[in-house]
Length: 342
Image 1 (cartoon, rainbow, N blue to C red):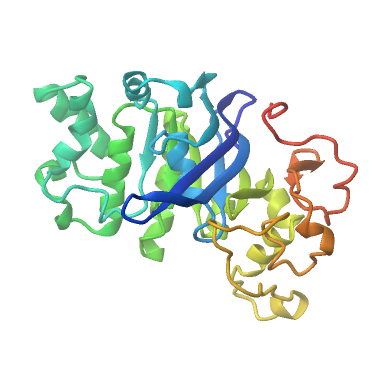
Image 2 (image 1 turned 180 degrees about the vertical axis):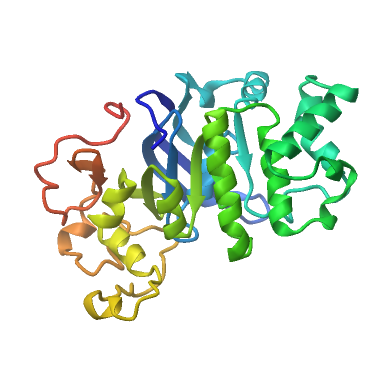
């Protein structure tokens, strides 16, 4: 555990709705509610895992935190500075501390630029290095991500997927950031390469005192690298807890279903553990269900689930869940919202 008690990122009641237009005059007829009121904190030095099915809003949360998407409403505080209220130039300067590692290393690198140009682009954009100083900094960054510094004049197509992702990591580190959003950085890589990239990220975190928001589908990998885990479904947070609490004692039925889908290389395991298969498809974020977002697929849903929007309440110390069927939910007092997110 690398985390401290100091809050680096604080997200308060964040909404990100994408308008839907129709007709010649492009009249708005609805909205895709990708992120629908989420609140959480990321402590300095920790890795916060963010998991959920495709389309649940994980990547949108990461991009909205970095203001690549301007939020519909809500606040994102970085060192007590509300990023959502910053003017463009002030936000541009803030990007030196906030970076992102993108999911697809084949699409995130410009094929017409050399490695030197790709990694050095942030330094040139902010006027921090040029000439020999730029070459030396690029060489240092290549060393940092375990790539040969002689690769600086090569192009992306000359590298494997794992090497390309290391170039992406080097580019993210060029400005010496303190917070990095890792948007499924290993999902496009071979299994044999995934562990190498994850180990590199862990080593860099210790060496450079980095803080990560690690977005992923691979629950076993999230358990390995994360300190705490956030489980999302259809734009809402279902559960938030320490990684061991989530994996050993999951409270929300959606979390239990996700964990039951993790393959275990032990035939005897499935004699004692029944896999939870969710029925139906994920509802459309343009027209989400009333009440609990998960109720249409939940195996323990009751009539009240269609009427009550469950708040994210602290059921036990540091373990939050948004489900009225969770034991102790009615007695829980703390609710994560903008008034008491601290």
